[in-house]
Image (tube, rainbow, N blue to C red):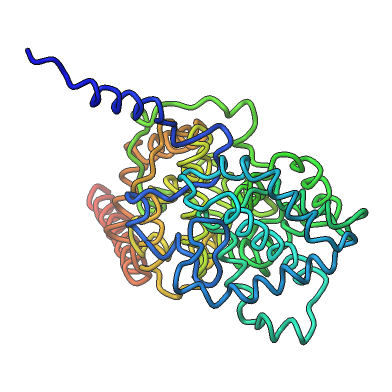
Length: 438
């Protein structure tokens, strides 16, 4: 056997030693995988503004670069320490930690990266302050009001994030006594611009409904927020029973039984009711044969927001995939537009898309390519009980009768009339027999 070329061995050794893991322990901002992304490319792509390195320089987002720089300048001028050098020094110090937060290798030099992060973070902070405290006529010229909601939407895309700790450092550097807690500003933008602007996304989320609850949320999450997506997810999971220790154990998805659709369950006698006064949209509740489901409002924003939240779970916290489990559970209940129509009728879905079939396709599409290595034990318990109820012979017969003879008002009337006529016939026959006997 011919001896290997030592130069080749040296090069291979150097290549292997230079290999580094793609993800670090600090990683929290991810490129959405091609497999997930191909379901709906637009749902993961910013429409107006690039934040962070992943989409910086994209041709169709360049128009926002000038307004970003103006807002950045205004934030520095607004600060108590009107000193650009101190902001630059702060970001330079944090740059290695920031770089470690991204799943991809950042192609920018340290200097370029510092510039991108500084401008983007100061832009976000000024945007949040203007959103909360009000903007001027001059601000509307720089950034038209019709762009406010699209920008807030872009701030909730997984690939369009900056680490929250950078925003926090710059915000505290700017003010000796901040005019409002940063997490509070971020919470309001998530709440009113995208997640529930006038309850625009989820129709019955009442968590954090007053200032005391907001303050408690801020206090309990102040050191744990990775970025805006993480903030939105934590808000949606507020007070969920799924997060309690008693529900932390999960069964393998292989043990998950087949689930009847909402229409099939309803035909078998399962009652659907909207769960009111709940604090988390994930908390399904089964009592007897009544399934209570929190209301969800479906708008043009809903799919993209849910997709990015699920993508974050799939990348960052798959063992705590509460939202992904919830979407899969809804996917089991919703197969066709008839299921959507039933849930709309019961007040569980508030359809702002207008087309029930589009809502069904949305939920079915969201569940595609979702990986659930474990599935929440509470959902499994609920659906097993539903299956047992629907599988009971008496309930099956009742479901068949309802499907065949009572599926429309006219059929129901005709069936009742037929039964009544049959009873009269039987009575008449009995009386005839009795007369013959006597």
